[in-house]
Image (cartoon, rainbow, N blue to C red):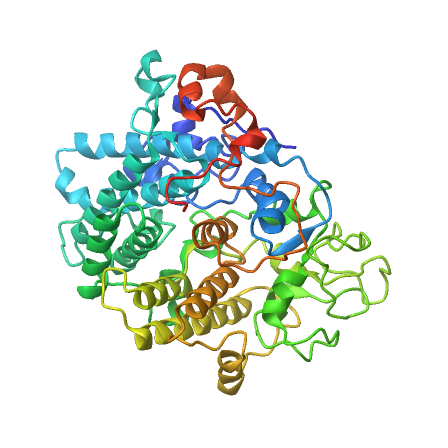
Length: 542
């Protein structure tokens, strides 16, 4: 297992250059070259920005292993994992990558503020604010209280080596204010704004896309915080939807990465092949038996016909693959079945049908899990935004209740998700691509009894919104986990009792206990066991 620096306080100046992700050289040699001195390593504004952009998504080995070992099977029930992995060993991955990024962000803002022409860098600053907000919100969702205001300043002296933890409620509100300022502050037609050109590996200096990204995040967290911070949430929803603020929502497949926000390897500069990321997690010896679950199969197929004739959700044939006998046989979510062999061999192609008799169940599509050049690590998608709007209109959150608008947004979310994944396969180096569903196929999907929307029945409508939002985030496991925790409406197998039945947050890394003990002690509130920390609810949970 890889060892990654995971202290929030011991961050050296070297981390400000390399971000401390896997090594200080791998893949980042050109990241911080000064644009006017291409051969000189420097802490430049463009270089620091690009370093943050390229590491804002959850792409590390530890992160993906945690998702496979804990979230997919036990928390989200979107898959069955046949190996009981020591999940706490991997729970520090998100923590490890966050604090070097926070350090770089603070260095970046200091450089901008010290620049005589800092007003010409306001767009760059707002873009960095949005990236940092995205990463910080994810940390709060996963860990609860975190070191924030006093963190990321270790290069300023030993007084900052052991930062205090901020209350998650305070950080949520602070970050929401940052997002609002950024969304409303970015200048789209101002020639005085300095462009960092191809140093923006995230959205390629498309300022309109940056505004859409900020507003999408604001809408997500307005819904998430609604029951705790109703005034703030209502104000945000009213401003964005009532004011018709820019959001992803045009289903523009030609601009896939500009409306489905995340880390797209094809946009990176310089290019990095993520050969040890998601694929490595699927073939790592301790976590390599993840299968399609009966829980998910029940939401994608009308029956258990092994020939797939009951499949009504077109994404099923992209996300999953058949077993050794070329049959659609899900593994029971409750694990009441034989082990079923090893579906992900060392190579990036599946064994020929009929050659691996031990492989009994449908598994995740090996073409997806082994895609190192095209697979996007999505933070928030266009489909995600549609499902947020569907819930907002169905519940009347900050706007008048409108079941017709809720139905339209719900169906647009489903179509957007399907279109996204089929567009992705057209970009990816796949063989045997599934056939694009026809308009009639999509209509049949929307009219299926498990999917059809009935806004007159609030309980049924909200359950279907949660279910389809949960399915759409199949490859956004932390977001799926947030939907599970917030709504309590996602499908679950009533016969399944997970090894860790309450997964509400991640435990703090052990290095915090050892090296930041006084502040860690206050944060845990007497809950010392990592397994017990899993049972502690984050701020917005009911």
